[in-house]
Image (tube, rainbow, N blue to C red):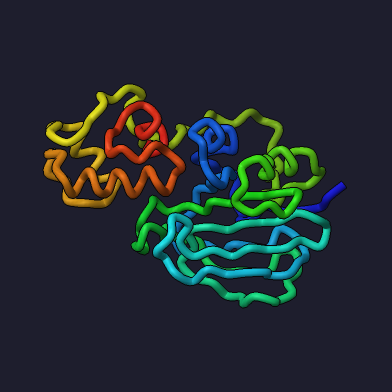
Length: 229
């Protein structure tokens, strides 16, 4: 049995492996919800086989880790890289810091760590990627520890934090569309939010679609809305 840990000390996920597969991601994995600057960690002993320091591509800054136990780990959208190709690392060692880099910007996406795992070293090949969370749930001790209860008296239920997300159904928008949905879209893409879908908005949409393995037609329908969130 493998003995990996998670790539960052959180179990909170925004998009899981199934979500990525459903929208045709070119490098399906797990999106862990972390703030920019959160340490990203080696899931096991291994060797850094490559790093990408440019933010021009869809994956932004990346670290690729060849694991001693077998398999291949891919860390995307980093804000900083702390290792170099050829570096031998141990389980839990910091590889860099999470970010939102990609598409030529430091904030090309919302802050998160996209982590992909392949058993056969077929980097960025969807058929070779597997769900890392399934592997973790099959292990005895995940990274995030369970805090034991301090009393046998049932505690009052905590008020859950509000979840901020897009409405489940939004209208398809394209060049010429106007209104609240367009303004929401522009805010998510981090461009001027004037509520008017013009050429600049279409350009940003196409870049987003290309980075998420979607049909790059500049039209925001159900699949693109699902990826945007």
